[in-house]
Picture 1 (tube, rainbow, N blue to C red):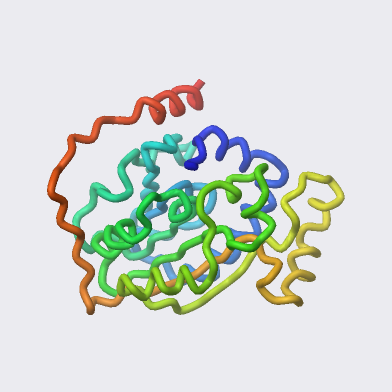
Picture 2: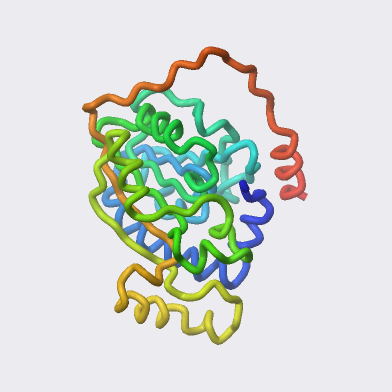
Length: 246
């Protein structure tokens, strides 16, 4: 199930959402490297994790799927968000240097087709950072967070998906060792749980974070489609956006 944009916004405004964003964002920043004169794309609902790139990157875009809906970001200045079909993104080939995908792969019906499209828009040696709920983690089993929606991944599944589409994993991280509960005491000691959980390895982590590099060979062509459809804007997405603007 694809989460509604209003639910995503509400989660990241909550105390649990704020601490989870901080913990995951720290790992994304460590994996991003230098952003000087880089073109950065956030895919899915990645805007809570993109602000660090605004001042450093040449360009920052946030693509949100039509079924989810979109919200204007950032709050100051022109909006960087685009409502689109993630399987047919409005970008030329080799257009971006860094792709950060959050709340994306677990909600797509065809992850392989999404990887083909990501390979197409990624520049040579571009980097892809993916955040997905861990299949056996507590967060994937909880209904009170967006990480409990969609299809969670194991590390081996994610690695196979990347390698089959000419992306080489370079670094793996895990995050969200704290249980997905809203108890004030638990949130107060969230970083303690994060450090303590790492002592037991990734088995207690809530999400998997991987950084992968694009390889030019073997090339990954898009599938040929026998029919082409005229894609109309999603009514649900428009309704969600209007509701947020109010």
